[in-house]
Image (cartoon, rainbow, N blue to C red; front, side, top):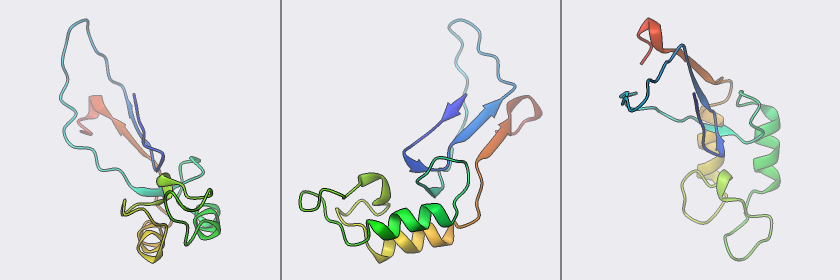
Amino acid sequence: MLIDKPGYLDVIVIQITIENKTEIDLGETIMVAGDITKDGVVELDDMTILNQNYGSVADVNENYNINMDYTEDGMVELDDMTILSQNYGQVRNIINYKEGGI
């Protein structure tokens, strides 16, 4: 199962079987901001893309991208770069459900 949000590292849950009409509580999943390229790692390429869009404002700049606005304040700014920098080096989370990973 893939849990995904644009601009964030995805979470993959493996070894999960869902029977017809069965509910499974996966608990709370923390999404890590910064994977703009969606390659499973927060790295230099992501920082470069965010830097190219730095200073863009919603409804003003055509290069504004909400997927890089981690503070959701309508601007790609220092706070968004700080969030990405704090997550630099993080990789996608693969959780083995059968081993009690959730």
